[in-house]
Image (cartoon, rainbow, N blue to C red; front, side, top):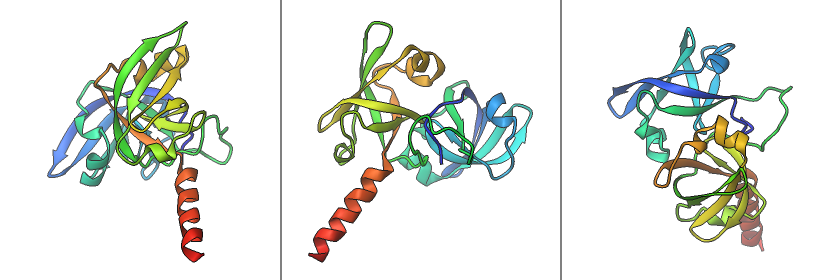
Length: 200
């Protein structure tokens, strides 16, 4: 589990394809500093398992299912990625509960500069808008953000200077793909309500 507070901007070192999957090597001195085999690190919001560390890099295996459901298939050496280690019992929950399980891939539609911040509109895959509410939480490429506005096919977030500087969203332009994870609580509530209706 994660909080959606990006700890470090990492860099993809190499992608070694092995059939439908790949072994991805990522440089991230901070997240590697205490990483061990089997630990979880979120890469652009996708929970991945460390299989090996060497110096300031870690390696992780990415399977076809992950590539099919996220934007990780487009990763290339030199690309920057958002990194976050899994939470511990002593971690401050600065964002919201993030599983690292991507619900869909959106596209940056527009970026509108404001007074030191940017409003970013992102398209929504079909079926996800029902889980998103104004002033609710959403994870974009592993970043916990507050929804400013939402409609049937897109939502808007406002990015403060710190987010623009310390995450990949400051660099992504219209047309860029982003991983989306909706608030898991909304999905559980939907299932419970549906079960209750079915019982009546």
